[in-house]
Length: 228
Image (cartoon, rainbow, N blue to C red; front, side, top):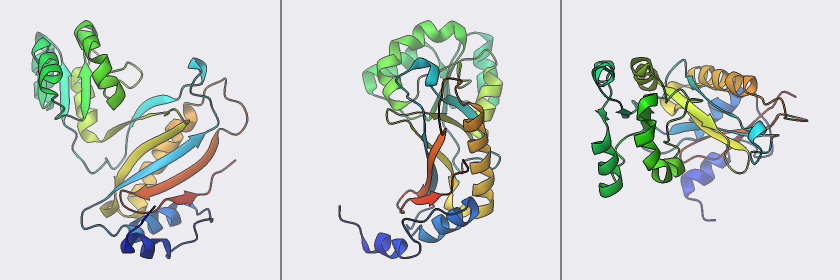
């Protein structure tokens, strides 16, 4: 795979095979980020579980202490008084069936988070095939199916992130922007790792956290030392 000169220069700043303490790894991430925009920093955690089994799923959500550096565009499916609550909390779009049709007919996806009240899930269920693959389907586990829409909207705007396993048993999650600096990124990373460890399934056997890598949008992956 061809890599550009900036990437090649970044790789020279560290040893690919080394595992670094989290603060040092994040310091290297900020130094290897060479793009002209403020790159997002992502944490990639490989877990010793099997996502094919329902009792080994790892999924949840957390509000990062320093936010994500991005203000999420929030869509809420609600009716009656909950519409006003969602709008007052700062939701970008609020509605019902008309939004379902806009998504299905216009292929409209100008939003980052979808929240729904429980009584709207019958309507939202029709979007499972389009929202599911994008990781946007509301879920009680991630706090996006709730009667307290105001709290859900506020948390999403404040930097709430959802974490979940992919098919290869890896969690990929943003922990902020390069401009945050290593210390704030570490605070976010520590909060996310604590949440992932607390979500360890009872059925998980052996070493739970197998590997950790941090990387900026355009930068190389840097391995983080994992505590056994």
